[in-house]
Length: 162
Image 1 (cartoon, rainbow, N blue to C red):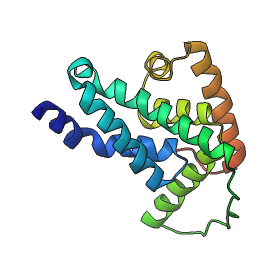
Image 2 (cartoon, helix red, strand yellow):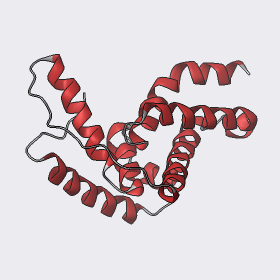
Image 3 (cartoon, helix red, strand yellow):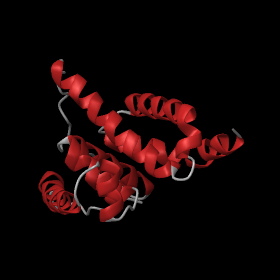
Image 4 (cartoon, rainbow, N blue to C red):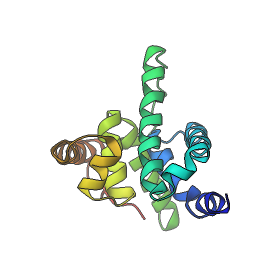
């Protein structure tokens, strides 16, 4: 299964970033769902080897949604978000990235998944719809509403990710 090992070596960092964003910035949860997805993929590798990236993204979105469903049964008390410090240079990029992750974490899971797949993983509307098992119209409406909500949450900050 050398091709599976190659896939993991080449794509695991990008998939971890996707999982991190889908989990609302919870790195531990992102690592857990990515590991679960990769274990699942290993057993199905012969069937999915032609399009493993698409399978992985869909599985990550589903795993993140299932995680949120489980957490909603046992709600956690949210931490208060403090004021974002003013920084310059590279530090500002870190602060901006953190602000984006925090704003994404406040979106409903489906909306967050659409934005992550469309803008962070650079999937087309059709690819996003296939990954999430929904229609292109749903992707378009969730994108529009999600970007609007991100603007509300982030105020004047520019919505970019480097």
